[in-house]
Length: 420
Image (cartoon, rainbow, N blue to C red; front, side, top):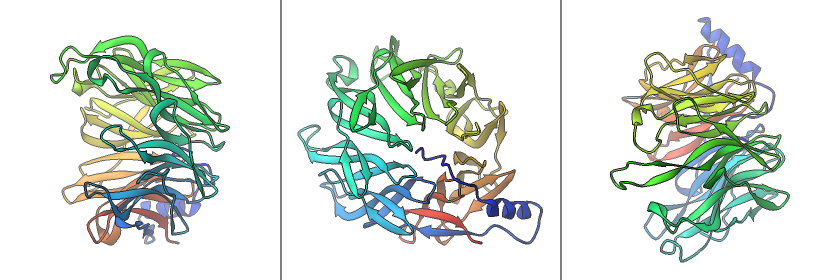
C-alpha cells in the first residue's frame, strides 16, 4: 500500500515512553538503528514499509554500468535479511511500494533497445511469491508503477503509441495513467489533453493523480520562448470514470499526491507551474466531500506542500518561503501546526501513521538528522555511528525506515525500532 500509512495496531510502548520523557522523567525512549546493508555495492535506500516490518527500496550491487556507476537492484528487507528481487532482463531495478501481503511493485529494466542510444527501457513490475512479473505498457516503450493497494492493484503511468508532434517534447511518447488489475493494464485516460499520471490508490480502488485538460498555458521560459503546455488538474479515477477536482481560486493547475481510505485527497495547486511566479507556485490542498480547500500557511510563509495523509485525516508536509527555509508542519482541523526542530534550521515532515506519529528530517550546519514527532514531543533519531540521517516512512507499529551515512561515507538504508 502507500508508503506513508499502514493498517496495524499502534505501538503503545512508544506512547508511554514519550509521555515519560515529556514529563521530565528519567526514562527516555531508546531507539535501535539497524544498517540494512547493500548487495555488495556502495549505497542503498529504503522507501516503503508495510505493517509486518517488510521494507523495500534499492541497493547497489558490485556491478557497474558503462559509465562506471553502480548498478542497483530492487530489494526486500525482512527480519534483517536482504533479498535481491532481480530485474526484467536489463541491468537495474527499483522497488517503490509494498502491501501487507508482501507484494512489491516498482520498475525494472528490460533488454536494452535502440531508444536513447541503447539505454535500457524500464517497465512496471509486480513481485510476488518470489517472481517478478512484467506489467507491460500501453503500447509505447516504458512504464512505471508508483503504488499498490491491499487488493494487489497497481497504478502508475505508461507510454502509449501516440507521440507529441510539437514543442520541446516533439517525438516523445505520450504517457497515460494506468491501473493494473486481474492481469491486465487499463488506460485511465485524460481530461481531453494529451497525458495523465496516477500517483496513489486506496483499498477501495480510488486512484488519484493528474490529467491534462484541453486548455494550454504559455510557459514563458527563457530556454523555450513562446512554448506552451497543457493545463493539468488533480483527478480521482473511480469505477471507470475520471473526476476533475479543479484548482484553488487564483491558481491555474493542480496535482493530487495521495488518498486515504476515507477518500480524502491531498495535493498541490499552482499558478504557471513552470516559471512565471516561482514565489507563489505551491499551495497544498485537501479535497474532501467534493470541495478543494487550501491548507493553512505557517505565519509569514508563502508556500506549503502536503506529503502524506493518514486515515484519520491528519496531513503532514512543510510550509516555506518560495521553496526555501522549509519548516515541518502538520495540519489538523484546518490549522497549521509547526513541528519543533531543535538544533536544526530547515526540515520537512515526510510521513505519518494512523496514531499521529510523524517522521521526517531536519537540516543544520552539521548535516541532516532524522526526527520523530509525537504528541507535542520531538525525538531526534541518531544515525549510524551518530552520523547524518533522515526518516522516510513509519508503519502503525512504530517501525521507521530511512537513510544514514555509513562508515564508508555512502548512504545506507536503515531501520529504527524502539528498544524496550
